Amino acid sequence: MSGKTVKIGNFTLGSGKIAVQSMTTVRTSDVENCVAQILRLEEAGCDIARVSVLDEADAQAIRALKARVRLPIVADIHFSPKLACLAVEAGADKLRINPGNIGGVREIARVADCVKAHGIPVRVGANTGSIAPAFLEKYGKSAEALVESALENVRLFEGHGVENLVVSVKASNVRLTVEAYALLAKRTDYPLHLGVTEAGTKEQGIVKGSIGIGALLLQGIGDTVRVSLTADPVEEVYAAHAILRAVGLEKDFVEVISCPTCGRCEYDCMGLAERVAARVRGEKKQRKIAVMGCVVNGPGEAKDADLGIAGGKEYCIIFERGRENLRVPVESAEQVFFARLEELLK
Image (cartoon, rainbow, N blue to C red; front, side, top):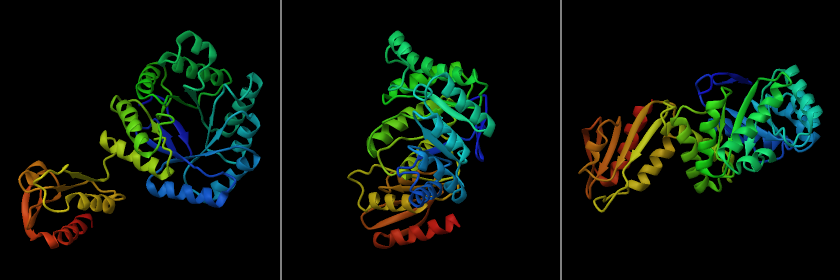
């Protein structure tokens, strides 16, 4: 994780806790729908919400959003220093801009003066579509080009007295993303925003994001994550938490383990596993639940589970910490299991 800290609203990046981000998919000036989407993101566990600013109406709408939501708001702006400043003045908690398309020295200075006056941070960086031409020519489309381009953006703002920065180097190629962030982490101690950009639809994007973001988090790299999906942004939040849980950076959740099943499985293990996972999705308790396919290996393989079930043709066993507690007919097993699950979650 980074050495420096950056405060975004009520969240401090670099403090050790990884912030989960997502971005709204409706116009920011559509305040009612934008607020509704941010509230859904918060309910799903999002820490920071980003909104796009295409015009003055979008920029001014941030003031209305801030009055109705609790999540910090990041204003995403391209091409216009005027819109960047309007968004900050309307209450944005952070800017995300690309210095390469915001204008020249005068425009960058204008934005820098504005964020300094309001005490908010800026995310800068590069992706494979915004590498500075000089670095693209020197290094090609590579980790070195991404990092040099991002650090050039950092230097631009540092030159104007802004050191309240977050940095990113995204690519749609997973290997390139990991290589770039690993190199960037050696070159800067600013907080890093992780993500695999343009990762694709829900299924493909979750795979690419999990590999890229997970590989970096396991190396101790990264302070905030966004799993980019062409899907409902709430799915980005769920995916991000799943990654954090898989790499051991989020502890307060109910883990559901289940076997892939085989020919020995003679009850609806797959369906039950899905129903159990849906029930515990929002629970903030450290528990482990096992839904196993058969009694041959189930209790042994899941002996550390707080509660588990394994089935046979005529009966299922319900066990706790590997020890059988109940043996019930298959037709009533799910009802009995859910009753024990509710007791455990109280």
